[in-house]
Image 1: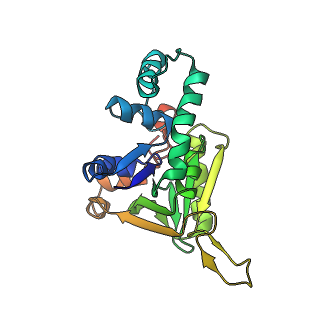
Image 2: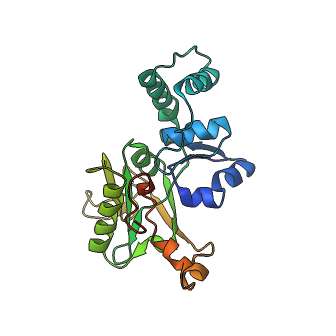
Length: 229
């Protein structure tokens, strides 16, 4: 019976998390625009960086017109503004926000979240509970190594730098009243990280297939893969 907002997460798609939550009676919204379009079409993501790259703007206009009850033109700016309005209230009414992570630093427990739309910040900062589902291969020892992995990820995604880089190291807190640390200030009061094996440990032991775990999921396959060339 919960309202859940969800940031783009290939790890969650791997285990069909959204579908499972919906079957359990929860209302779940993908908040990345491409993922939202694909969700409402009942389709599947087409690419790592652009999940709805296969959907023309005319189809998006028809889809959003059905959802809103308005006759929307096939104008990209209007369609983006409509999606923003649709999802805005969901961020602040949601019980739970779910994300993945591009890389995690073991020494500090910090999650790095790379994005351009701003939906991940809202999905992980507005609801009272933030749950992150992360593939175990995303864990690196130190904060400095995590920064390096994060930069390689966005560089090979063909960005000089993304619009937003969030580093989440725990639930929100404040010590502004008599220096008493209290959790749940303006952001989530609960922060949970779940590491997924899903066959990764077995894969890591394979002499050749273990290389798959080096994939950054940066979308560099469109240009030049930093791992496999």
